[in-house]
Amino acid sequence: MKAKTAVRAAKILVIDDEPEITEIIHAFLDNAGYTVRVENQPQNAIKLAQEFTPDLILLDIMMPGTDGYQICNQIKEDTKMADTPVIFLTGKDSKDDQGKSFQSGGDMFIKKPFSCERLLEIVNIVLLSVGKA
Image (tube, rainbow, N blue to C red; front, side):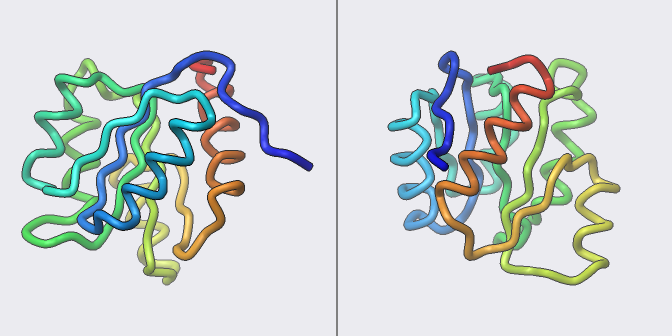
């Protein structure tokens, strides 16, 4: 079954310190009709999120200097972004990591590697569930 493309140009922010990953995700989601911004420097993530006001954030857990849990906590503390869904993308797979991702405010947890088609399906589901697609 072919993945559904974006109903409207929802805004997605991808935060990952690996440019290869953000380039692939950006190209795939952009091609699906989403407006996508990427940030490879975790220290710039909150500022970009505040300026871009995304409808959804894709967030890596393991990054230099900080981690996705801390970034997610800061996002959820900001009243303008508190309801923004956060999907964690990670190479980690322990139950502790999954639990910690939800405790920090994450909405979903996707283990790397993943297929772009599966990611698009999940993005569509999450955006539909919050009325952003």
